[in-house]
Length: 201
Figure 1 (cartoon, rainbow, N blue to C red):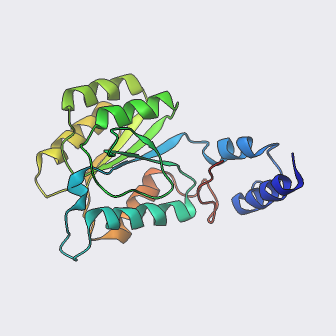
Figure 2 (cartoon, helix red, strand yellow):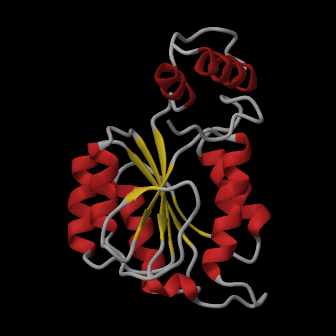
Figure 3 (cartoon, rainbow, N blue to C red):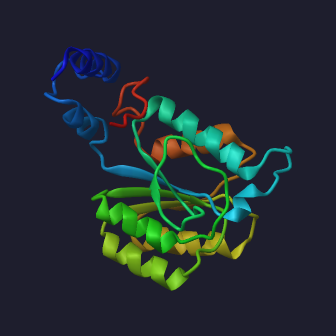
C-alpha cells in the first residue's frame, strides 16, 4: 500500500473510531457498511414537483440524504434515471425517469445488501414485479412514502415493506429534520461514530 493510501486509511479509521482494526481500504469500506444497508432513492420525474415551501421535492430529499450520511456510513443508489439504470451515487441526481422500483430492489439483492431503505413519492412502474423482487430479496425493506397524502403509492409502499418484515411510513419532505431522524433510526444510528460519512473507493 502506498504512503498516501496508508495516510488515508489511518485518517478514515480515526474518523470511524476503528483504531487500526482493518488491513486495507476495501476492508474499511466493508467495516463501515457492516450492517449491509442501502438507501434507494427515487429520482423519477415526479420528484421535480414543487413543495409548499417552494423547494423542489428532489432538492429537499437531496438535503435529507446528505444530512443522514453526515453521521451514518451508508451508501445510496438512485433509480428512475434517464438511462433506466440503478446505480450508486454520491449526490442525488435531478429527476428525469420512471419509477422502476423492481429494478432498484434487484440491484440491492445483487449487491448482497441485507437491508434496503426505499424513499419514493409514487407508484412503481410495475407493482407486481416490485413485489416479486421484494420476495427474492430475502432481507428487510423499510419503505418511506414522500408523495401526496392518500396517494396509492403510500398503501403500496406499506404493503411492500410489510411483506419483508419492514416498516412502511408516510413522511413530509417539508419536515426535513423529522425525515432525517427517521431514516437514521431505521439505519440504527449509533453503530457508526459521528463523522463517519460515506466512503467510496
